Image: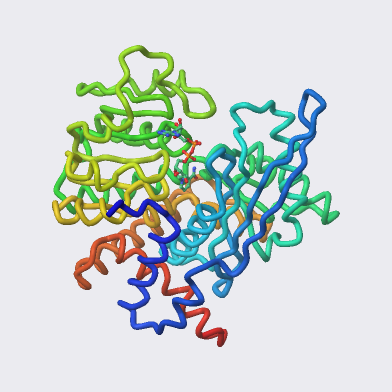
Length: 414
Ligand code: NAD
């Protein structure tokens, strides 16, 4: 039978398994198996050549029993309703894992910002906010950056929302530039969280991070900061990639040079002739493999060929459930996306708290709080996996879903 690569149904399956393990009823699954709200919008945008193009966008709110919805906005040609729903459900899990008073939300617009001018992207960003403005807000649903969106786009979105509401609303969105109420450490937070998980996982497996051979798929926001942090920690980054190919050098890549030359979309390999494919990169001999690009990269097809002894998922959904099973059977420690990439939402929460109180923290304060949060989350899930005899993905879902399930119960929803 063909492998199920559908992120939405895979997520539903693991949530169901987690709720069953935790002893919740079928009714709880009925509540949590889909977002409570899903809005589809059509956004007309005046293009630079004078024509009008109509874009499709989405905003999903999985469950707000534990607090307002929180989750990024993705600008990508492959965005679709099911993906947005799955991503919103993951945000619920992430918030539960790092113990934040949020439910999951997510948004997306079907577009390719790489083919658009700055002006077109600005008009699209503002149009998207106008289209979803009734549904979002600082105490309802707080967007953030995701694939192909950045702090400039967050700034335009915040400005548009503030204009609509007629008051300054920095807490409407996170991932803003510092001068508009952004938090220190937000841009690198996801990669910092992944780095903490990598170091904790390496300790559990007795691998010295100094000299450890690391492969990172993706060289965007997450992948680039990550390569820098690991390189600075003494690890040997021997492979990186982007949408167009991969670079591999068993002796270690010149990360500072690559960071200097990458473009704002995380493209670097187009400058080189001696590239390999993304699929080849995943199977390279290394100690730690970090998929930090897109979903469904490690599948039933290639899981048996993975050489790493630790896989840490910086991207959302890079490993299928079949591959998870194969990697687990092979004794490979798989640190799941909902845990590994929760540093971003953690510092987004810090940004929102700072906006609400109007008092801002230093980079050191943010870093310390992030560190404590992620180390606790990692160890909580690692121990849950050990004591319950499950893999870390199921353990993470169990920890992650509990907060929203309990909040739903106390509210009398189930
Ligand atoms: P990004 O847009 O900054 O970078 C994406 C990178 O992936 C780029 O290098 C791009 O070239 C590469 N890529 C795109 N298509 C590819 C393909 N088909 N094969 C291989 N590489 C490809 O995105 P990002 O913010 O770094 O996010 C990367 C992943 O991490 C996503 O799955 C995202 O959901 C997840 N994530 C990011 C954050 C964050 O704060 N940035 C937080 C949580 C999760």
